[in-house]
Structures are given as structure tokens and as C-alpha cells.
Length: 435
Picture 1 (cartoon, rainbow, N blue to C red):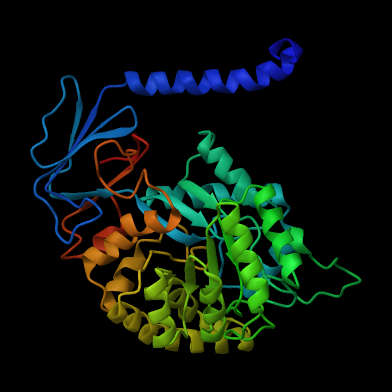
Picture 2: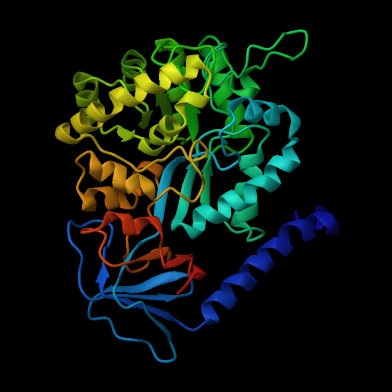
């Protein structure tokens, strides 16, 4: 068979493989790095261990704990009064954009900025996110395949940023939260399943297949109205049970998890019945709905920072959006407290893009401010997020895992605000922030 393969095609296959093998050999030949600090949080426990040591070699964790010997020739980084943690994960971001205080200017830029420009603008967003300690993110919706390109460029080492799982286009109904503006149809073509807009079960299956065809690691679906859209009620169901079941069954058959944007309780019940893997936002969820999530092991991704960010400038939004924002934020605190009380699994997510990329760590204080323990908040961004995202190789500081490591000053269990500015960030054994 090899004799029939053209030389250019063979080079296309073999050169990247040779490059990858060479990079792996170079990484394996690098000296070990020993990280020492006053404390260590392994991603699973309630408490810190003291002192903390992590040994990294070849991009992986060789050892982690307290009494860990230093390998010969290792580079030792002593962080003093600091805490070592697993690389953090944000399960709800949009790295390909960022809101300003001018809603209508943002809308105009969405039309005026071509995809290459948006891709270039995304580069500092990715870099700031990584430098904030978030070594993995789930990007839950983007246009023009900018998220796919950014993910691939980061994975190939072309640009700096977190490991990305991407959804490509979010899936929703005509007129729903993912359908954009009600533009004159003579001016703009109506989007269809390839753009994530679908009506009826078969179109929704097609929409899932299109997103997977073009690179989706996860499927994002919009069964509920949203806040930052002009025409749909925030809590109204926007997809039928049959449509939701088509999305979920198709995604799961392709091995993709499903994240469901749901502010409204009725929409969440539809999504939960269909078998989604997470509910995003959840502003108006009632106790019986949260109890169903607990029974089924469905994660809540609360995105508290998005609500706080919008409320800080709520009077600058059009009245329709401002009213929805006030209602959503008014409901979210009781919802979150009820989720904690009932033991709903919670994964960390910020909806960054609504907030500034790189400020992701502010979510920790919002979670603990509503009653979550600091250790549970840390787990939500480490082992719990890894479980939701289906990533077994990250999320804890354990021997053999990928060397994603973060360090913060002091003790995050006594001052959660230290999570907002790490003093060390390592991804796959490479240092991106160091003291």
C-alpha cells in the first residue's frame, strides 16, 4: 500500500509525526523541576497538606505530596508561603470575544470584524486566561470556526493559551437565544443547521453532526432564552422535548457531552429529561429540578461572575436586556444556595467574554460568598471540572498525570481571593508564569 502513496502525501503524514516525536524526546531530556511551597491542595481533599512538593519531568507529574525526594540535577523552585494546586479549569468561556460597556458598538463590531481579525483579537484573551491559572477551558460557542482554529494553534504550540474543548456553534431554535438579531431577511440569509439553528428533531440531529464535522469536542445547546439577547424571554423554553432528545442522543452516540444553556426552570426540566451532562447558568431552577440533577449526576455550571459583571453596568444596556438581567441575578443566589443544600454537583464556570478574560478567578469568591466551602470551590475548578469535561489526565496533583500546576500566595482556604492572581502557572510541564 505504501508504494501507492505519493511522496508529498507521505511527507504530509510523516513530517508532523517526526516533529511530535522530536518534541517528546526534547521534553524527556529536560531536567526535572521541583516545586516547593508551604502547602499543597491535591484537587480532591478538604484540607491542604504541608509542606507541599511537586516533581515534574517530561511534562508529567513524577511525584506530589510532602516528603518527596529531589532528583539529581533538578531545577528547584521554592515558592515559600504559597499553595500548590492543580491547573484550574473553566467550564464556560467564550475566548473568541469580549464585551465592552457599549452594547450597540459590540453588535456593530460583530458585523464589521472579519473572522481573521476576531481570531487575532482572541490571542490575548487566551494568553490572559492561561496566565490567570486556567490551563483548561471549555469554549461553549463561537462563530466562523475561530474557536477551532484557536484550539488547534494552542495545541500545536503556535500561540499561548489554555487547553481548549470547543463547541463550534451553539445549537438552538429559530428566534432563540443562539439565533442572533432579527435582521431584514432581504439583507441577511437565515442561518440553518450548519450554523446551529434548527427546527424539528431531524434538523437538530443535523446541527449536531455539522458541529462535530467541523471540530466540536462538546455540544452546546440553547433550550432556554438568554439575558444578552434582545428578542427572547430569558426563562422561556425554546426547544421541544423531541428536539432536545435528538440533540442529546446524537451527541452521545458520537461520544460528545452536552452543555445546556438554561436560565428557565421549564427548559431545564426538558434538558434534564433528555439527559444533558450540564446545566449552564440555572438562574431560575427550582428545588425539584435541582433534586433531579442530583439524582442523575448532572452538573450545574453557575457562571456567577457573568451576572455580577452585567449588573455593574446594567443601566447601559437596552431596557429589554437590563430587565432580564435584574430578574436572572435576583433568582440566582437562592438557586445556588439550594443547589449546595441538595448536593448538586457543581463545576466552575464564568461565562468569560461577558466578563474580562483573565478575571476568571473572581468566581471563587462569589461561590464562597453564597455558602460554598473554599475546598469545594477549589474542587469545582479542578477534579469536578475534569469529571464534567471527561478529562482523566488533569484536575489533580497525582503521579503520572499531565503537569498542569498553579501556585498562589498564602492559603486559599483562609483567603479565597488569592486565587485571583497566581504566582506560578505551569501547563504540560512548561512554565508560563513564574516568580
